[in-house]
Length: 419
Image (cartoon, rainbow, N blue to C red; front, side, top):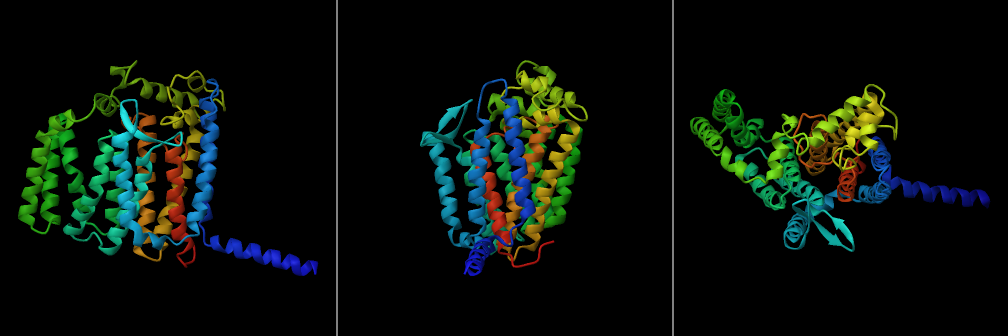
């Protein structure tokens, strides 16, 4: 009798666990590992301030992990039927921020919900991924009409975010759109032409000889890739020429603090006590870590709060100082493994919708990781983009786990052998 009862219990557990039997456990493990390390480093950054915010990183991470597993057992194909509803809710939440959002540091980005500050733009990234995945699933981006349709759909939430103003997240929206268009069979030349006016506007005001080369290259790409070679080449030439001249006008649309973030990374010593302070102190902290680091809770830059709000966008500098070059390499390897699993899941997905969901999450994580680490080491401007799973930020962390959950659902229901 006891043996039969034991067998029944085992069968129940096996039936329960069978709902997650195809999960990508490597992806889940590295996500948990990064979140755990994030909590440790946030605690270190706040160690001498008497704050206990680091607990929230693990609490939200636990909630996110639970939701991730719940989403993973659900069939992601259901979202195909609801993608317009998701798109509508995304835009409504972003519009609500403009009407009744909470303002901090000159930006209106948060909604106060039951005493918690929620940042809808973080969840809007997932809304955009789901919507674009469904659109490209039904109509691949192999024609200009399909590409323009995708851009028009992405432009609405992008505009809401840009007007908050939230330059960093608006750039993430652009990266997601470009990545999903590329995976959706858009011509790479078209994608280059899409971003070329921005590059042209910057180069016209920074390096004029290079601007002439750039305009000529864009004219060549337009001639070779667009349906009407002559008009395509001329259009690319005229568009980049005009955008170069309009660079000053576009520059004037940015807020002062956004301008400082974009240019001071080139020479932070121009304003060492103002806009360049974060960059200078972050580089000092990372350099001080040398090979093996000063040790946890032993970094002088971190423990003496030389880097304000280090637990958010500059958490990588704390890792560099206290865990050293080896610690930084381990973090980079973990992100590489996470991205590798996302690519493998995208390749093995049973349909285009699932594959595009995985690529959308991949584009979001890769862009944020590269830009955040770049600004920590002085190779990119400060744009307020958090480091996925490591930086403190409740909405960002929860959104990351929801994105991982979507990809795990794709893996869990692909009915194919793993690599």
